[in-house]
Image 1 (cartoon, helix red, strand yellow):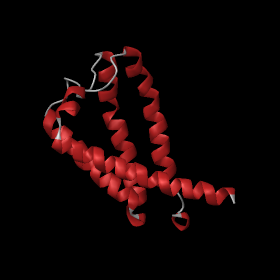
Image 2 (cartoon, rainbow, N blue to C red):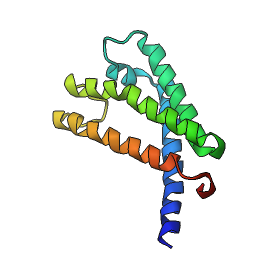
Image 3 (cartoon, helix red, strand yellow):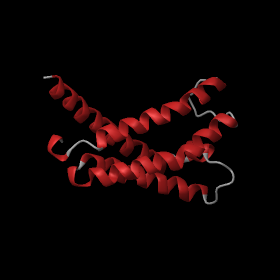
Image 4 (cartoon, rainbow, N blue to C red):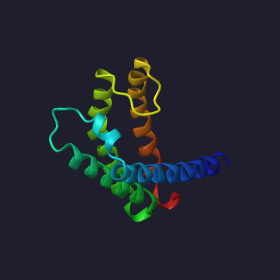
Length: 133
């Protein structure tokens, strides 16, 4: 019985994570400014990279929801989270706040380890056995 509840939780969480990636990916195109603010200065083609990461988030989110593409999408999303981690570090080091975000430097640092938690959630929802999906 507990395994049924856990599997239901995994399915619901997978849908939320997939839809979340799709939504954030769309925002990359509709309103790229916050993502441009996060971008480390040493990287070239800021707008192009924002659009590329947005497209990757949309594709990964959709792929996570489709059983046949789930595993490859999960790997892609994990790599994406790794690739955008420098932007999160840049926010903390340079105290870059997004609109509506509390102006507390410690929050910028506290959110860094949560990126690892989020990656673990992506891993958990993405690598369920196919017969469990």
